[in-house]
Length: 262
Image (cartoon, rainbow, N blue to C red; front, side):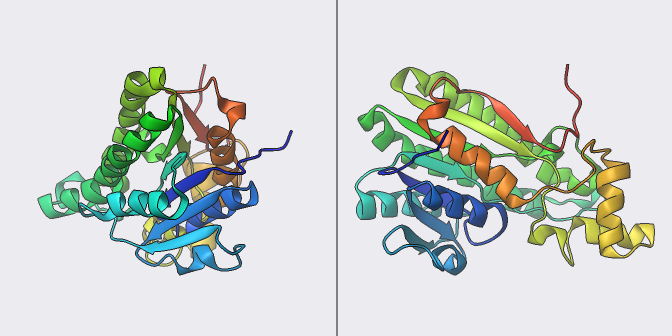
């Protein structure tokens, strides 16, 4: 069964690398046109068919940034069918007590308020069209928080509540809202200076060994391997399509079986 998004217009925040870049490429491969918004969105447009990706340089952590990305889609494509709230940052922390007000504020603005502002801008044109799909990328840290993820965990957990709120209010208008909760995914955040690099120093391990230890022993992922950005992107394309027309208000985990369910 082929996912066909021909004629659809999408906005992807944090599209310049990692999961956002993979999502942008997957949407384009399925036929969509995409506004790729990021502080540095250049990679999103590289190799894309002409006219299919509009790279928008935007600070998504401030008022006007997310709204500008939505406005670009309406100007360039005349419509907006899909919003992917993906942008986010994770700063490794020592403990809850080590995180001050400015650090909390930074992550609330990037991780939560970017999604609030983008959704608030995207909803009016979706309401006018009588359809739309808002997909928000959360994190497993928001389900099982640890001190190293203090403010990141709280902000990412809040995104699932935002998703359910939007699904409940706007579902009757044909707008579907779902979230995706990835487990460990191989992104630039897993490189030097990232959370696991910090843990590697504490464990006395090289980075690659620390990643394997984190995935297999600390997180206990049954599949025993770290995920790839394309694993998340594949689910985004499904949720954006009419194949998912009866799905809203749901959260989907892409975590290698890490979090047990009943």
